Amino acid sequence: MKDLYGRLMIDINGKNLSDEDKFIISNKHVGGLILFSRNFESFEQLKNLISEIHSIKENIIIAVDQEGGRVQRFKNEFSLIPSMQEISFYAKENNDMEIFTDLAWLISSELIAVGIDINFAPVLDVDEKTSSIIGDRAFSNNVSEVISYTSKYIDGMHDAGMKSTGKHFPGHGGVYEDSHLQLPIDNRSMEDLIDSDIKPYIKLKDKLDIVMCGHILFPEVDANIPSFSSTWIQDILKKELNYQGLIISDDLSMEGAAGENCSIKIRDSFQAGCDMAIICNNRDEVKKALSFLDDIKIEPIKNISNMKKVKDVDWHKLQSNQRTMKIKNKLNEIRS
Image (cartoon, rainbow, N blue to C red; front, side, top):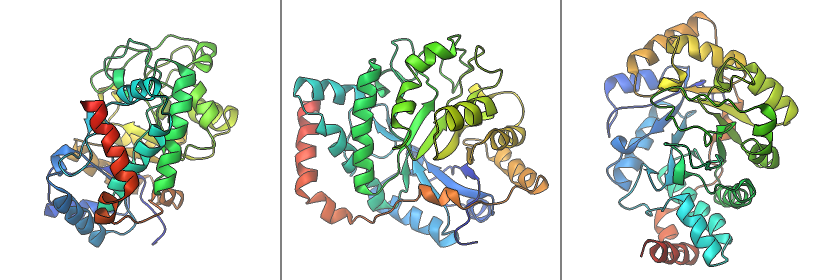
């Protein structure tokens, strides 16, 4: 069982593990834990928390959203990261495209040093100037630039020893609504999507290790959102795009995935082709889902282990590294 991982990623409420947290983490169906700002106080506290998690279960993925800008869960000792759109402006003004590789290396290295396996990045959404939730999280409103910049970003992640996650498939940039709060509907045709939002996945399919499905409905393509759609996952992502990596749902407790209870949504996501499903901010639904997964005989699988970090990083050596200091000087320049 050491190399088998549960297929559910969950969250915890605090900066320390409660007895209930420990009990739930030990469940065979829990294979991942995503951390938020509420779980962070300092580097040392976070390192101790992750060590405690691993003392309960070795075969678990520790994840975070550490994109930069509006979405940076860990600060204090961690480098303060501008939004990717700000980085893009700097890169073009200074003809410095390597900043994407260097920055991704630094972000990933800092996370690995504290024990994080995976950062859910980069955002592959094309900023169509319409999205209330994506906006400056996107690298650009130009699809060719998104592909070029995120490709370099992935190189930096891989250099550090971290796998990449492209999100939010097939694209969240063309709708105004925030899928955390409601279900966005994108009425574009498949032809339109192939020419824009899906193009980064086509071009980067061999570099992406993980794809996260977005909670957007594309009624011209399928009646289900991507996480629940074999059309999107099996027919388009796997067969047409020939993507061979892991597939994970976005948080199934978000309003964009509303409808059935989370247990049914987990079942539907696995049937559609997701390797792992996420439930956050709803411990009652997590408990129900764990029992439900027993009932429908879902078992841990091996390929989720591919999300693990593949290197170790010493925090103190990282801080004195010449590459680190050079990148931090650039970040100070961008913020000034």
